[in-house]
Amino acid sequence: MSNDLYNFLVPLLPYMVSMPVILPAVAAALTLILSKYLTAQRVVTMTVLLFLIGLNATMLYLVDREGIQTLQMGGWDAPVGITLVADRLSVSMLTVSSIVLFTVMWYAISQGIRDGGKDEPVAVFLPTYLLLSMGVNLAFLAGDLFNLYVGFEVLLVASYVRVRSGVGYVMVSMSSSMVFLFGLAMVYASVGTLNMAHIGLRMEEIPSGTRAAIFAVLLVAFGIKAAVFPLDSWLPDSYPTAPSLVTAVFAGLLTKVGVYSIIRARSIIFTDGSLDTMLMWVALATMLVGILGAMAQNDIKRLLSFTLVS
Image 1: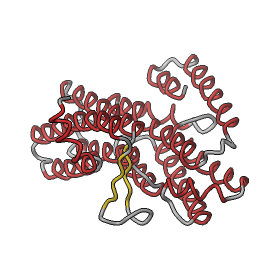
Image 2: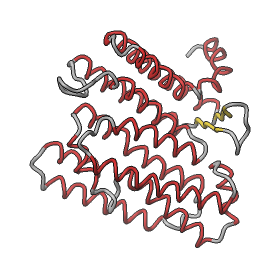
Image 3: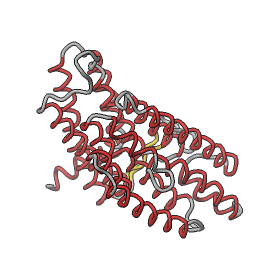
Image 4: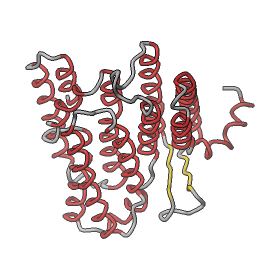
């Protein structure tokens, strides 16, 4: 990147942080308005997804050079306002997820694949796909636990449209959301804030047993979403019910948001490492159960679902 272009982009970096959330939301509304014009829907979707790849790759380069970027949405300072944080990890995840979303949609359009049969409405397929992208991006950029929860809910609501026969998936997702809300209540009652940076500072004053209990509740919520053992039984039964196109997005993104949340909680909030040993054994069990389950399958989708757990 030339020095002139670099110097031009650096002042724009704080504003770039909000674009992965705003652009898919605007594009989802636009594609919904254009529901009767399939070609226009596809052009808008592919243009936005391609632009997000370039935007996220640019942010990755700039954040690596300039350091962590924080944006306070709506003019409200933390911990009251919505805080978006772009660092190397979050922007790396954004870049990879944007490539996955674009590639899957490119394949879907080129193969003429839609989410629905001849008698099923498909006008909401692209709008919900964009909303799923928005939810994933918000979860990666969220600087506070509440907006991480909002990001989860947006992507899960968008995914409900796709797993039409996966009632178990919907129920498990709702259960994990309730556990997450309970964890948020515990955090706020203990430290009086949901901003991750502030929680990390104030959590040091909380007794170690209380910290471990709060972390355990959040790990259950994130563990369900990430499909870690022993909270993984819903995944092999839910993903095979969705079309292959949707399964590809779920496998590449949705469970990874749960893993990302565990990393964030451990590295920013609960830094004492009190549950590291348990996490190690859970990780080992997840790998073994996933791969042993895959060896016992004959259906390719269920086999891949167990491999995803591993």
